[in-house]
Image 1 (cartoon, rainbow, N blue to C red):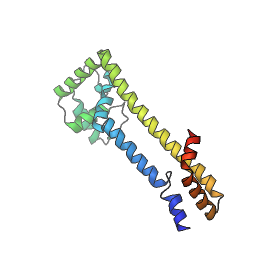
Image 2: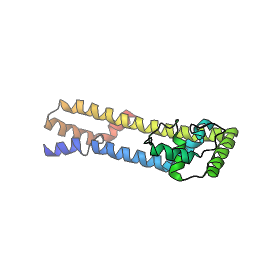
Image 3: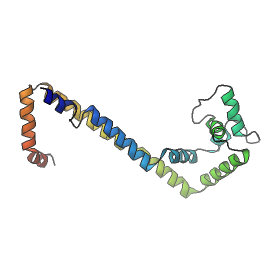
Length: 179
């Protein structure tokens, strides 16, 4: 009985531990494909000019970093990405007004160049495809675990042992039938 419990819970390919391992590998693959800092820069390149104005008018000469500092002093340190996030980023990094303007100018040139638009969006799409693929693997694993649980739920301990032995002895034959 304890050995069956180990087989069913720990060493099962659909066990909780295997789901954790799968999640870890998913996150590792994502970090190899697009590290978080690159992902953030990529996300920045997808933003339009309104994002970089950070709630100020185009004629306003106040530094976004200074606006971010005022926001923090007012206790406003959590904003949605599309609404005043740029001032907080500038404040955190410590960008000067001239540096902010160079970033905005570079962003404008990126937005005007159509090849970069395509590449930026392809990079974003590849990340979404990877996420969808990993989500699908997780879903398949969970569904397989549920089906195995339903199948084994009606079997006695002896029947499960016989079932495992049968599957081990006939795995090649079963594999050929499944292809």
